[in-house]
Length: 205
Image 1 (cartoon, one colour):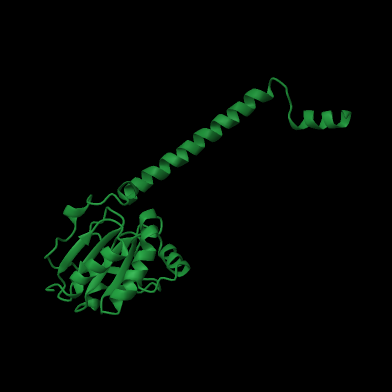
Image 2: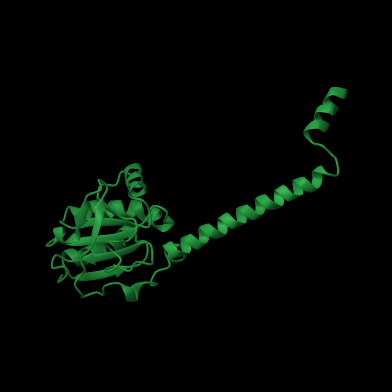
């Protein structure tokens, strides 16, 4: 019993000098933790966290329905540059997303289901990852067995002048003539994605 008491006393000293030191360490640790959290939210705000899923926040900054869809460039997951003009003549579903975006992750099963139907009708799905390294987008796509085209623009160098995206996700549907047919600034159900895809495939229907 004496040995047990000695061990406990050694492990948890009860001297008056030790207590203030422990309190100071706890206070410093808490201050550091709050600092890290505050920094993360500040950076997140700049990257669009404060606009995730809010819808409508960047509508005035995007191409309008009935206007030509601007061209953009982004990186394939292999690192090769891809120009959207290489897809001219095809109806497109352009999705701006990020793997850190919770609504983007939540809607992925619906996107995959709708894409499998729409691609059979000639529509091309182009999902452009923003504000994250290309490898993060590649890893997420691989882990979730994504089969549609994934591109990456980590610093928005190839997309920002044409598409000022502040809301995640952002969906833009473009017909074969290159005209924007619908813009959706929120996650979509399968039915909503199919209906918007139909506008791009058959704009006069």
